[in-house]
Length: 97
Image 1 (cartoon, rainbow, N blue to C red):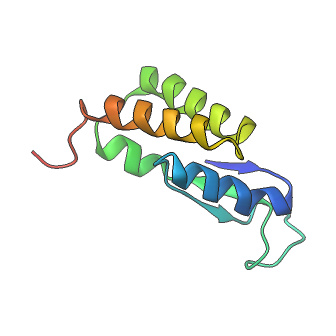
Image 2: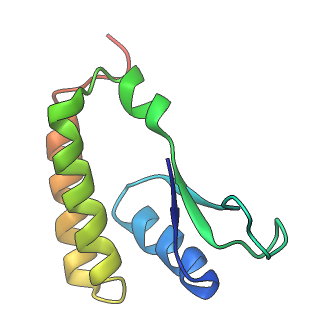
């Protein structure tokens, strides 16, 4: 999944999401007029999510967390709260048995 975000915001979103333990990376979007070093999008690794056995009904939680982070990218207390939510939620989805 690639979401289009303003160029300067793509890196800002990547950094804020990382602080909340949500792994993404800035990435080009179709018809992007920027180079690979300055991109307009953020890539969310859906295969990494499904590898941990999350299903469609878990995607709402993920989307809500991403929304909270993007809307509060400079609020460290919100980022920490989302990080705690993410880590608590993911305890049910072991990466390795």
